[in-house]
Amino acid sequence: MLSKIKSHLKDADKTYFEHQKFALKVSWKCLCSSFTALIHSICPALFEYTTSSKIKEMHRDLEPIYEMRKRKHNIQD
Image (cartoon, rainbow, N blue to C red):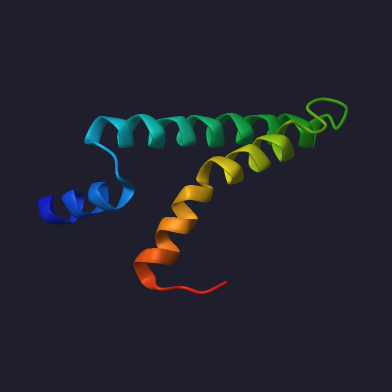
């Protein structure tokens, strides 16, 4: 397991704590987006575009990871 962790961190070009910070940030954004989507489902006038905006933001933040996966697995667009 340790070798798999080290390999992943090397591929991500992050230290353990850099990776942890990034993953926790993504997790928090997902949790908040889930909450705003739930509230929006009950009252559509609230958080009209919050969840979709956060999803777009997360997609942009995760773009380097998509590129890393493509390189690692030789995936073409």
